[in-house]
Image (cartoon, rainbow, N blue to C red; front, side, top):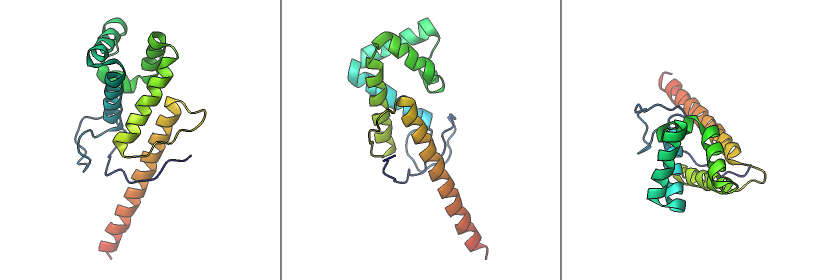
Length: 147
């Protein structure tokens, strides 16, 4: 996979917690926050703000899917997008992933056969890898101080 490696500036977790994780990353603290902001931006760019709000209202009133719950129910969100926009939902998904990569400060490289969920899994794997490396580095630093 051709994803350029670049540190994430302390994106602390992929968990969906609103608590401050003392991250130096300004703004959203979780992958879910970044994902939701990416969805907001893409829907606004493609449909306009009023139409985006109408989509969210429709999802909540007719399907009990509140905007803030979308990151936890992505399968359902994309099924509803496909029901509404047909094949255009794939274009929307790709635009959301591109925006997410941009928000993470990563370069997006298209991979043949990948869909939204494949890219999202790659994002989660990279975050996990970077968190492990950060923890190892911090542990080495701590151990060197105690020698």
